[in-house]
Length: 367
Image 1 (cartoon, rainbow, N blue to C red):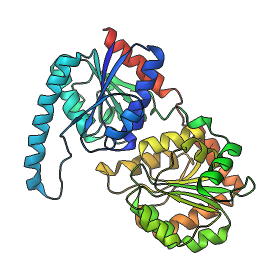
Image 2: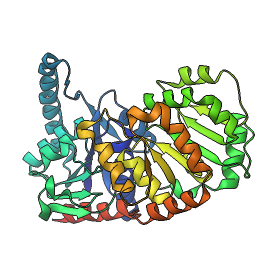
Image 3: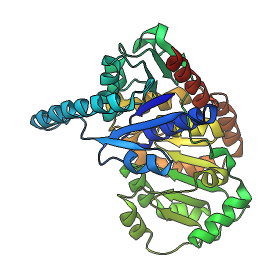
Image 4: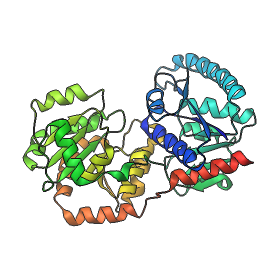
């Protein structure tokens, strides 16, 4: 069986794609998997790290501000489609899997035209532009939220949830404390509560600015803090801290997320689909700050699906500077509220997503 998987741009697309590939390999170790991504984007680094080959396309997103630049975008898209035709003729996939992102649009459109059955995986509660464009080409569309027939043909939909990194449940508190103390030179203990701040795979300016604006309150709280800034904001955030503190870790990237989640009592996060799926799977109390800089404001839709069920707290991006840290500190001091949020968010988890999607991919391949 040969499977072509395409998508990327952010961790929200890459982690589900890799999880689906891992699930396929677990079912059929001889399965031949090839990824197609966008040159210069993070999938070109992360996918090989996960052990899979990837080919990059010269594809990029539409420029909504400088419209004239989209002439070049269109030319790159056509070039990418030509390259995909060559890839498909040489690789001869039995099935294509699109997870969203620029590359997915070119790869899956060409695959469908060349007679390859395709499956789409939509992570968000508000469908992305690429997957909406491909809805008529897809044989099956796997979704994470109910009510997605407003975007896609109902007969193609399968509610599977979002695949997440398979090792997330492997962390434990004792090992986490040892790891963070030894790696970052802090003095974390099991007795103090821990606040985890994650702004998505690329970081989040608003979340980082809100942390910097409230550093003294965070220090005074006595709470242990693991703050992932993203590589673009790291130096600025590190400078704002101004000194090494035994209760605050400031890092551009957390390589051991299972340990970070194991230690966290409360999580501050953007509301990307993958982040929310991880919080649901692990049953974490969270303060969500949806990014306003995404298509159709889909992160707010993602967050509200939890807020409506008392499974998370929402702070608007525009209010984050004044409200984010006080809301998180108020929550971390309220054990009853934490317990309620943990209980409610666990009911929304769909833990076997990657395997369910892999089974659908195999059915299409066999046809």
